[in-house]
Length: 206
Ligand SMILES: Cc1cc2nc3c(=O)[nH]c(=O)nc-3n(C[C@H](O)[C@H](O)[C@H](O)COP(=O)(O)O)c2cc1C
Image 1 (cartoon, rainbow, N blue to C red):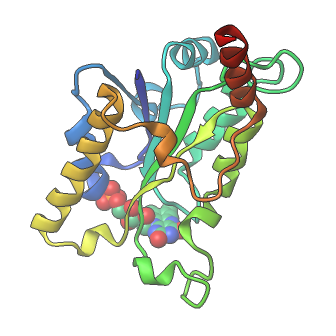
Image 2: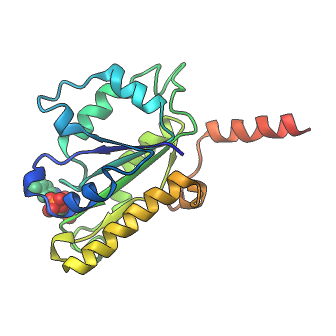
């Protein structure tokens, strides 16, 4: 599977956790790593280029620190401009059908804080639901997020274990050792685009 990692960190020089993840996957063969803040320091996103990158990949990973219970601003700008009506969704908007979307995030808060009874009141999958639903609207499968909680408090050894987990996950998905359909976000209902594909295959088989 062809993987596109859209990386967003507005202050990479001060990054600890995302820097480790960045270094682990940036040069992986067969994976396209695209640093949005480096490519577009003034936020002038090249929509045509971004759309052609999307067309050329199967799995899109949004890799970023968790900021204000969401993503750094350039991810929102990217979503607003690149996922156009009639291209990504709406009438004729089928270009992302049957592709996969996943968030790979790091948080400041501990996992225990991301609970109903915890300080942040919602779990991480609930807070990421705008990405989940955006994927659904675009006919994509949304995979369970990869998250490193309270990464800055981890020991060097624990951070490197989690970093290798992330690298292994990306490599496993790339090489087909991990079936993305077994990694759907909890409770995710596949959009119709996948059902149509299944019915088509069935028709061809009979
Ligand atoms: C502007 C800003 C907003 C943040 N918002 C959150 C947040 O909503 N929830 C959270 O757990 N951590 C939040 N954090 C902490 C970062 O997620 C955390 O420091 C980062 O993931 C660590 O990765 P890094 O070392 O690559 O920067 C925020 C940090 C900044 C600077």
